[in-house]
Length: 356
View (cartoon, rainbow, N blue to C red):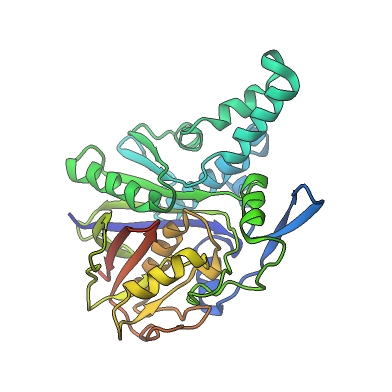
């Protein structure tokens, strides 16, 4: 069954909303911030793409957000923006389902709760941190705030979180359980993620991401939320269609990719995956990579989908911020895009999207 992307809500280091995201894709650059983390050898500033959720106050009173953590604020802002973009802010949401994909989940709040438990014991542990640390906390905050009455699901499968969650969203629509799915990908930068990045890469950091250089370790951690409003393709105006979602393991076999589609690569500067992307792309294939706009995070595949939707609606591809690398550059005109995500030694996912 073919899906339609009816609305996009997105926030990241590039700013808030579709216009800011498209501007960053056209210009091919964003400002990279940092997060300070104690490493055992002093405080280290780790480069990071940071997102600002101040725009949420347009939709929710500030006092109502006092007990909502940054992770759930990202989810709320992305949700409101997607509904606004689709013209559904004032619509009934009784037949709307909610699917959220996240690799890190509420890691920052989970560890904040554990810190309060260690410091204060069982009787003084923070109930606010506990409530926001459970697996489905962001989805619960979105459903309660927006009044969504359909099914709700959070999927965490690290790099495969987005395609796996999209399979569930597609199934709900195919079964007729809902008429619309609010589908979101979220990850946040936390001290734990920054510490792990520091331990993995050491104190030296590349000045910019070079995801198509297979021999370089240039990943920079990122955060943000990318939400899509999905419906069955019934001819209504939309950004694009989603034709197929496929996940699996290769186990030494060659990956089969559509020859008539621009390949949108999920390479994000991690050296252990860079070579896999180069090996997976057929010789002479046209490819693009936009991760230098939003950073390295498990949920980055959701941002790839938003970028593909914007490109298909306009009928033209954006240039890769880091250049084409060893691949053929993206064509000026595009009508079909295959988003490719690789993980581990053999996992893969392909999401094929096309112009309506």
